[in-house]
Image (cartoon, rainbow, N blue to C red):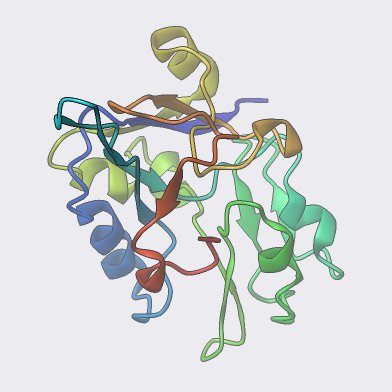
Length: 211
């Protein structure tokens, strides 16, 4: 089976959120739902030494996140009606709108906050990796929209060969939970996924992501 995934280059991302808006526009998502989101993460402090000199350990970086089309997706295991499945040809985790009952179990189970229940539609929505575009040999709309070329999409084995296998930095969860098919290049000042030195500072605009 081919397994597709995303690559994110934290050294390029400026936090402009063009990827977010491109996805929302393509899928006509309401303001309170986003299949791709940009986390703003920062931390550090100022310290004053005996000579009255101040130094800082402050850091700030952005992280563009969506569904990671995991090897062991928590959403599929949690769904009581089998409305989320892992596609056999692409490895993408895809919803079935006709089967979904909108219970939200998938949203509660996913450690990445990827699925969201659309109350108006009555079912769950999530990143599909733009499977229809991929089938036509095109890239997901978020990848094409990024002005800094901070996103890429392709077979995860190729992305890992080109960029390594880092799959988590703070505030993302332990990658061993679900086996996410994502590769990251660390931005400057990046914290390890299990560090507790920083905080999400734009939590008010995020959906399903814990601050």
